[in-house]
Length: 171
Image (cartoon, rainbow, N blue to C red; front, side, top):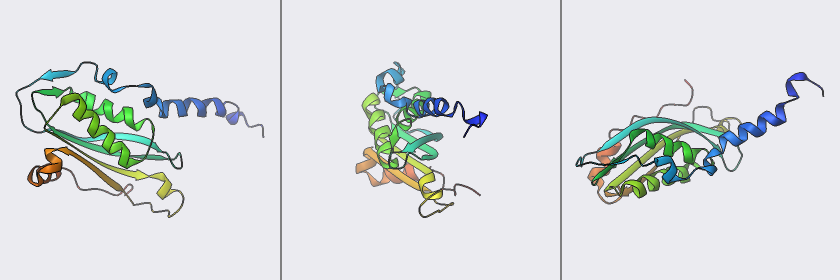
């Protein structure tokens, strides 16, 4: 087949795959770039609706959605944009959503040594939408709770009450 639009497709596909897996060439401390600051604020730091996309490690099909991250500082805080950069670093690897959620939580805990970190991720998976069961409206929610969010149900419920309700992928 000699269609003009396909001539450079192998090169473009290879470049796209490189972009979609660029997280393998990044490390946590470089991404944080020293943006860890002393703070006497003990209260919740919450960033919601951090958009992400990733590739399912089983089918190499996209999944995409939003991450909600909260943590309780213990003497230091992380620059807000770094939370989004951490999400991107881990999302730009072949993943399953469960591991992605845990990796993000552990990274924030490692950098900040906070009292607790909670991550909730809502995503739509093309492997469920385009193939297999073909469920267009399905979304998946995963959570990871560390520190006080893991051990104190009241803190966990306070955090979870701030998270928006899930919405269908389309519609």
